[in-house]
Image 1 (cartoon, one colour):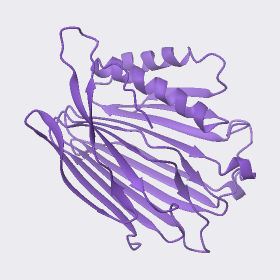
Image 2 (cartoon, rainbow, N blue to C red):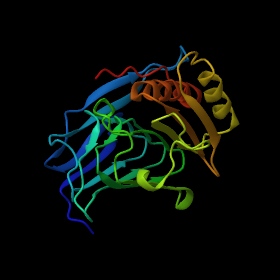
Image 3 (cartoon, rainbow, N blue to C red):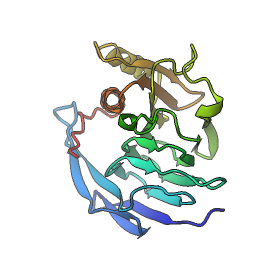
Length: 284
């Protein structure tokens, strides 16, 4: 196991009807900034706003260096609602031979909890290597909405797929049953990423994952319909239901902002369809 060079442990619970941060532990360079509160307006005029806690993760270093290992653990108690993001792009610096960077995230959601995790894009510099993994444990009635955006490098410097390796593993359990497993590996030097049926002319990949036992065909149809309204935005979009309690939207494009914008539109539509919430306006 690599030595931990940055760690966050956070626990949320409902106290007096409001989601509260009840426990936190972090080590430099990672930290949790001061929380803030949202009042989610609902589509129903008769329903009161649904409170939700906003949380920012921060990294005061230049990014993940060769040999760094980050550990991030989030626990949400029964009924807790959290919007989680980070301050800026996750930057992965060049790795020394045989020594890459690693990150492991663990998300545990209690019954009826909601976590919306929308981090900024991931950027791998030239010669960078990152092994990332996320384990998610859901309880009955809980829901996770999570997005990720992968950039090919610092494109303004001509770094397009010049990183060494990127691996990403995602496992999701619902009520102790494994319902989703993704294992992604990209090694640009040994792959023909521009080949037909692969990345072709696109350079950025984004995914929106939704896991909830509330999901059904209606949410898939809703998100596909809203994606048809993107107009002239040059992205490719695909979406499908997973084996059980899941929906994945994948978007490919040439610019991070285009992919992020399309993912945001899908996210806001799913908030409306699943929970009856109006769009969450997040300022950064």
